[in-house]
Length: 447
Ligand code: SF4
Ligand code: SF4
Image 1 (cartoon, protein in one colour):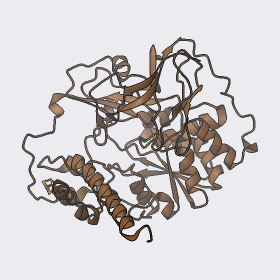
Image 2 (image 1 turned 180 degrees about the vertical axis):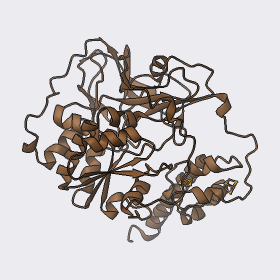
Image 3 (image 1 turned 30 degrees about the vertical axis):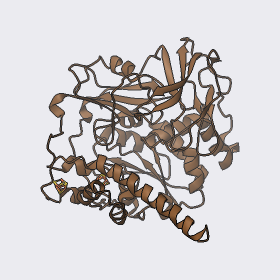
Image 4 (image 1 turned 90 degrees about the horizontal axis):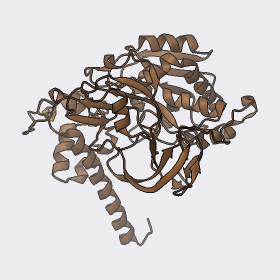
C-alpha cells in the first residue's frame, strides 16, 4: 500500500515547458571546465597538468577517502589547472580542456564480457572508478553509499519522483531509455542480494510510468505516488512506499532501505556494462525566460552559457537564473560556471515570477509548520537564528531541515526562511563543536 508523507506542497509544475522535448545531444563545447569538487566529501587531486593531451573518458582527478574520480568529457589539451568559479558559488580547483573535436576514446573504456563473473566488490569498484555520484542533485559518491548500506538493507528503492518543478531530465530519460534504468536496478539488486526493487514515480509522469512498467523485469515494482513536493526527498519517498519512518538524524539504512535516483541507475548500467565513466548527463534548460526549453545530453563541464545558447538564448531579460529547480536551486551570477555531475537543470525566471518583498514580516499564520515535511517549526527556527540562539535551534532539530523550501514557498509574509534556517544549521553545528572542545579542555580528554 502506498502511504502519504506529512506536509508538502503542490506548486505550479512548469514541466509542460520541456517534458515534450526529446533528449538532444548538446554539441560538445569548444572548452570544458571540470571541477575537482563534484561530490560530497573530499575533492579530487588533478592527475594532469597544463599542456597534457587527454582522451575522452580519461581519469583526470582522483583522491582518497570519500572521493570518486573525475574524467575528461572531451578529448583535447589541458589548457589550465586552477581555480574557477562554480555553480556552488565558490571557487574550486578545475581542469580546463580545449576540445580537439575528435572524441578519441580512452583505452580504459572497455565493456565487460561476463557480468555474472563479477562479485559485489568488483561491481562496486567499477561504479567507483566510473566516478558515479547521486544524480538527483545530492552528488554523494554512489560506491560509498552502497558500501555503507551493504548488509543493512532489505529494501531497494529507486527514486523516480523528480518532484522539483520545471525539471524533466529524469522523466525524459525514463521514457527514452527505461531499459538502461532497469539494467542499473538489476546491478544494484545483485550487489545487495535482493530479489525485489521498488520504483517510486509521481502520477504526473504517465509516459514514463508506462515505459518503466513495460521494461520492468520480474521483481521490480513501479509505485505511482501522488504528485506532491518533496515526494523525491529520500525520507519522504521511503515513507510513501514502505510506511517506514527514518528517525531524526538517521540514514535510510536505519530502516533497512537504500535509495538510488533513476538517472544514477542508468549511469550504473553504463559503467558496469560498457565501462563508461560519468562524463555526460541529461540537463533540463527551462523557465519562461528561455526561448526553447529543452533537455540536453550534456558533457560534464559545459559552461551554462552554452546550454542557454543551445536553448535559443533568452527571450526576455531573466530576473533570476538558478542551477537546479525553483525550490532548491542555487542562484547564479556568472554563466561561465560549468555543469557538474549533480546538475540536472538550469532554470531561468522572468521578472513576473519575482517573489521577494522589500519588507518581509510574519503574520503568525502557521502555514510554514503545516507544510514542513520534517514536522519542524520554521517560524521559530527563523526567530532563533536571528537571535543567534544555538541551544534553541538544536532543541528544535534545525539539522533535520532538508532545505526543501516548502515553508518559504507558502509563507504569505515572504520571510527568507530557508536562507535563515541554513544559517541556523551552521550556528548550531558551530556551537556543538565549541561545546565539545570546551568539554575536552575541562576533562583533559577523559570523557
Ligand atoms: S526548508 Fe526545512 S524547515 Fe522549511 S519546510 Fe523544508 S524541511 Fe521544513
Ligand atoms: S508561514 Fe510565514 S507568516 Fe506564516 S507563520 Fe510561517 S513565517 Fe509566519
